[in-house]
Amino acid sequence: MKYLAIAALTTTALATPLSPPVNCTFGTYRCTTPNTGIEICNVLNQWELVGPCPSGTECTNLPQNGFTLPFCTNKVAPAVHKRNGRPGQSPGEKCSTAGKYDCFGPYAIQVCDTQNVLQKVGDCPSGSHCDNLNGIPFCVANV
Image (spheres, rainbow, N blue to C red):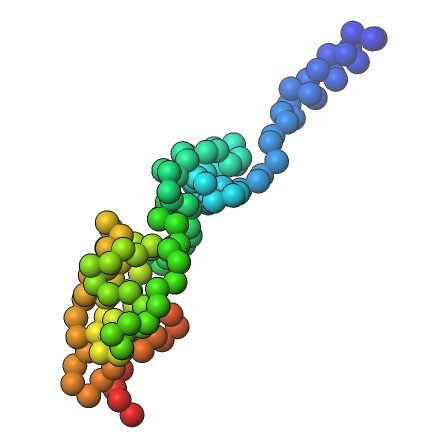
């Protein structure tokens, strides 16, 4: 009788394997805490380090093709003071977030390229000016 009870208990234990708790959704990415690297959710639904960010960079969540994904970007530079009548930085200067667009003064748009250098995208057409709409620069009509 006791052998039957042990066999039943063993069969029950084998039939219900322990599954790890779900900590994340497989295939998703995030920045580590602190923002020194990038992690991925593995097939066991647990966070696993993809790799550390290079020296002088930090992990930042950026919008990319409709998603927010972690990227290793240059650490945020100190604020640049206004000069020559144009607020912020000018084309050719270093920038901190690759892919980020900004107004270049009141009448042009610039972007931070993959080398973290500002590049002028273009001038706004006559009768318009650069303005940020929901954090994105656009050339909008003067009112």
